[in-house]
Length: 115
Image 1 (cartoon, rainbow, N blue to C red):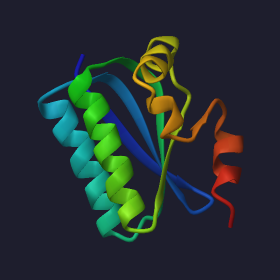
Image 2: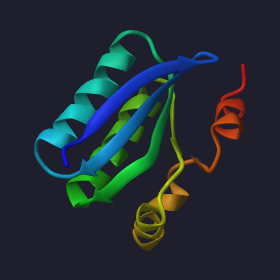
Image 3: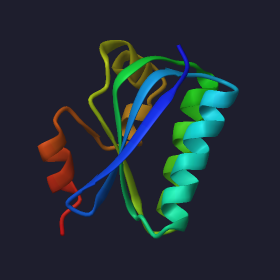
């Protein structure tokens, strides 16, 4: 299954719904390009909804970390929403859970960005 991205906006936050496998190659390039495009268009509050991500490899984790740093360096925020158990466990094992703000529900995640 390839990676699919759907971008929407709610309360001034760009939400990118991600589904499929976030792995080395085209999938990583797709998410990098989408985040870059959103930031280039002025987005500073981004929320990645990973509820339908079935697998992330090391390249995918690396890209999430690079995106977090890139957005933060532009005085923005990138947060994660709805991690599957597999992705949640991976984030804990790699200690990336301490880097990202992670939320279980969209309403709470949106509120965390403030006004």
